[in-house]
Image (cartoon, rainbow, N blue to C red; front, side):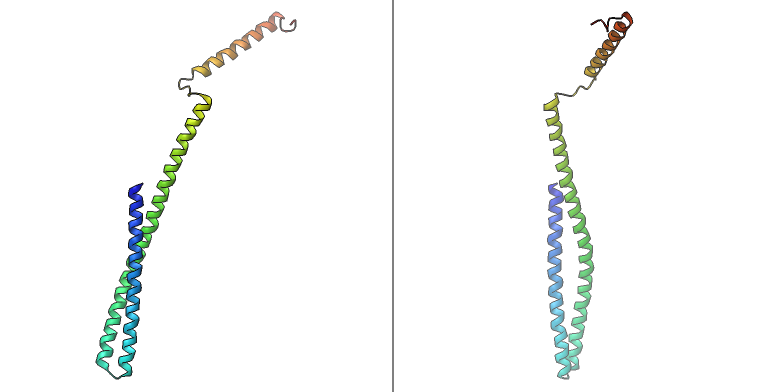
Length: 143
């Protein structure tokens, strides 16, 4: 389970790092958009074109990172689900074993061969045969 936990944590950390990178790229793109406006207002077409190119490049990077983020987010959800499932399974097996031990302490060890059950059946058959014999002899009403 530790491996699953470590994997989940590593993916979550990577997703957080990626979100931070995307946010930084968005802020940088906003600065370049502001520079486009400043260059346009000052009549500097060359600077405006260079700023647009940089903003477009950042847009492309952001889109690629967002696709990567979506893929990573699916992995995060799968890793979390796998880790939770492993924790639940481990908890259930421990509880089942503890329950079996408690039951054995209360009832005694299990009778794997069924000897005790066979003996009880034989005793019940013997009692039934005795009662039948008593009825046939008329002894059951005399007592």
